[in-house]
Image (cartoon, rainbow, N blue to C red; front, side, top):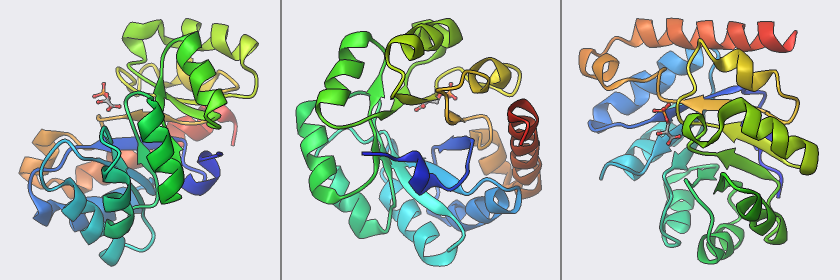
Length: 212
Ligand code: 3PG
């Protein structure tokens, strides 16, 4: 299964934790205004699915999906909420079966050669690399790309504007993800303009790195 084609041309994917569902639509609009349209709303809070549903209904330019999918039953819930992709921190047989059954593009998490092999055996070649910074960071991904040239990665966990270049300049890194675009502080302050600025900065930095 190939996933990145379903995420538009996004090179930066915000990993989002929302506690107040009222924040869903203005936040998504702020990110879209900044040029970031693939939004990973984590299911770490009880309102995660509701946030996905609100964005899917009200912000058609957004490609909203679910992050932190850790239970097979959640795939169908994400589909029902209008989510268009799913991301998990790891990979298991039962999650892979549920992902395939739901038809949702899925980025399973991997960090070792054996996990990458398992993903390939299950038919997944677009993978999250998590937690990136404490799992060897860019040198680890570079080492894997020489062995697994068919695999494309989205590293997350410790990715920031300052180190984006180290990740995005690796050819098999298709996108990076992180929580810096939508912080709890910005959500609490409802500082949508600042979110748009962070999104714009991330997009232009990614374009600069990739020469796009
Ligand atoms: C994730 O789920 O990918 C991480 O929580 C994002 O990590 P970060 O907070 O270090 O960006």
